[in-house]
Image: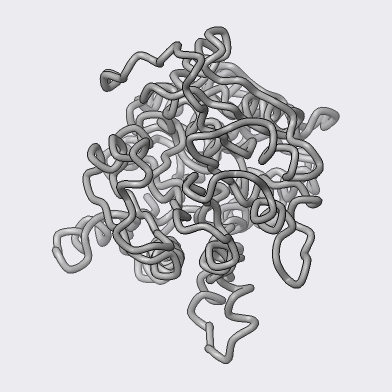
Length: 445
C-alpha cells in the first residue's frame, strides 16, 4: 500500500509546536503524523522507555524511517520528561498539549485533593486558556471526563486510539477507520484545527461528550474481546462434535447481523489494548453495584485458551513429553506484529520448558523481543527459517503465521510430524493434504 500524500513540514521557527507527552507507540505515531501534517513537535518522554518502544517496534518500518527523518530535520525534538509538569507548561508556547495518560511518571499522577498533580500544575500555569488539551489512553470509566472537568479551560478533548493497528500504525492514524473524539465543550472541534485532516480522512467519525466516548471505547473493545472468547468456547464444543469451527465461523459471517470480524477461533487475544481494556473495565465494575459475570467469563476463557494447545500436545503423547524437541512458528500476539504482550507464546514456552523440552522458535518480527525476554534460556533456540531442523523435531506448534505467506506443506510432509495449530492457520484442503496428524482449535484432520 502506498503512503498517502502528506504536507511538507513547515520550517518556520515562529510556529508553536505541538507538545506531546508520552513514550508509547501511540505517542510516537502521533508525533510522526503531526509532523507529516505540517507541524513541529516537542516530545517529552522517558528516554529509556522511548528507546525501549522504538526497539520493540522495529517491525513498523515506515514509522521508523519517518521518525529518524524528522529527528534529523529537527521537526521532532525529544526532551526528557521532568519530574514536575510545571517545567513543561512554562518552557514554551504550544499550539496544543497532547497527554498520553498511561505514559505519565508517578510524580505527575500523585493526587492533591484526589486530583492529578499535573492538572493542578496546568491550572496554575501561564498556559493560555485557549490552548487545546488532548487526552489519550485507557483507564477506568470516567477518568478522562473527570480530568477534563478539573482542567480549568474550555478546550479539552479525549481521543482513544481504537484505530491504531500494529504493523501499520502510521497509516492507520493518518487514515483512521474510526475516529472517536470527546469534547468538554460541545461543538468546539474548530478549536483544534490541527486534527481536522485526520477527521476528514477517517472512514467514520463520531464526536460527542468525553464520558460517552470513554464508555463507547470500553464497549467496543469489550465486544471484540467477547466475540473472541465466544468463538473459543464454541471451538471446544466443535471438538467434541467433530465439527470444523472455521467453517462454522464462515457461515456465521454470512449473517449480516453478525458480520465476519473477530470470529477466528484460536489461542485467544493478546497485545496491550484488549487486555488493558478488560482490566480497566474490571476495576470500574469493582467499585459499582453492577454485576459483571460476562466480562469475568471472557477474561477466564481467554487466559485458559492460551494453554489449550499445550494440553492437546500433552494428550497426543499421553503425557510422555519430557526431553522432546519442538518447533514453534510465530511468537507475536497477532500476525504482522512484533509484539508478544499477553501472547500465547509465553505460557506455552513456560509449560514446555517445565518438561525440559527444547523449543526452536521462528519468531519473524518478534525475534528481538523474544530474545530480549529470555536471554539466558538454554532451551530456547531462535531460528531464521521455519523449516530449519524440522526433521529433528517431535511436533510443530503454529501460533502466528501471516496470511500472505504460504505454509510450507511439502516440507511438513517430508518430516511427518504432528501439527498443533493454535491459530487455525491451515485451510481445510491444507489439513487434508498433510501426511502427519493435525490438531487445531475446534478442528482436526
